[in-house]
Image 1 (cartoon, rainbow, N blue to C red):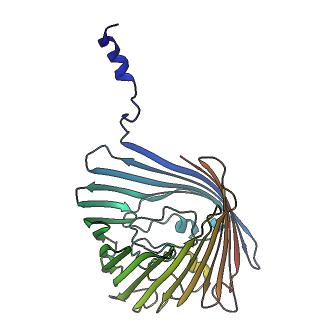
Image 2 (cartoon, one colour):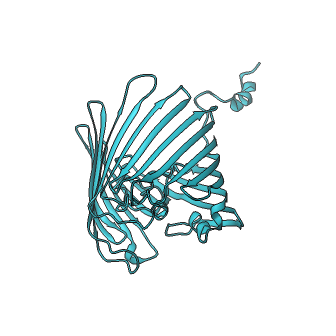
Length: 384
């Protein structure tokens, strides 16, 4: 047989390791979750949630990358009868409103939001990114006073991607583990435009950062660090917020320091035992009228808690190779208490089961003690 007769076959064959990768990448998940809310002295409420997400990435152009992430939820809940609850669930806090409540009928709500939509240009030492994306400046893992653009609640376990910001970010690489970041994030109110500059560096095994700028109505400066001592991870952040002006409505804000320190340690062994402790201090905390108001409040880096001191502890270990248990607790110095437990199990490569219990309580007139509540969650997830 002539050699040239084999060329069409060779052209169609896929050579292992040399097959060109597609410029498109799609991932996501489907989740079904049932929630039972049991307030003390009040009727229980049930909520059923179908949650679908997909993330799309395109890398077909040299030096350019395009990302889109969409979150779709169908909610059946007794709580939707409460005025404004549907608007709260479907709210978009960004500069652009990229959300829509496309179904509102009795106890049924359908809502969608684009929480990622951005383009990235990457040069040798420069990177430019614009659109809606996550800006993660936190160095600790529980509370993040340095996370000026994307603060979040530690109790919201169902949104692991966390919200994004509408912003423009310029990054300049300076060397090994060293860079400068400049972020500009607009707001509908010109007085609430945010911007910040961060310097990230590494010195003899210590990661550090220094940042300064404006967050909403506050001028802010902060620093953070992360290192390892004796096998234990040690991390800390501190930020100082000084109001530039007061909001026309709402509580009067004063200058405040927000500090977070934490440590974790992984024990050797098949159980992968992990222990974590964290402490948060806010020199002038913003009080909340009720636990419901606090838990629904869109948090900022200056309002991570409603008390001066807050402590957190966590213990996690593998019951089997496929099952992990995590116990956690938070204590607020008004004697409010949170206790949580989660049990996750891998059913197959792409299937997982999660059960979560969250109990909010306290002593006397503490915020959580005024309206104790227990929440039960059962979640089934398929990832693709």
